[in-house]
Image (cartoon, rainbow, N blue to C red; front, side, top):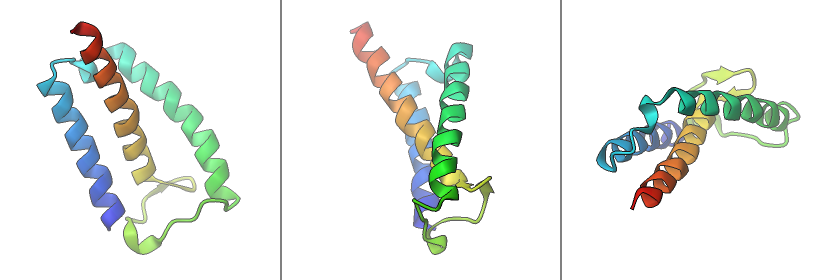
Length: 95
């Protein structure tokens, strides 16, 4: 379950960073629209990679919850990576 723990921890860290750096990104509707668009493309690409199966996951490292063929942890990490990049961009832009 290491992958699951790391994915959840990454989301918590990013949401805390949003509060600490006062970017208030997760409170903006345009951010959630952007995340929705990014996840739509992620679903297409990652779905293909896991359906083929080009990318394989060790079942012992994650929970068995999937969206189609995609482990839910991939969405959590995707959220963290995208959000942390935008948070840092907005923070540096405001300085």
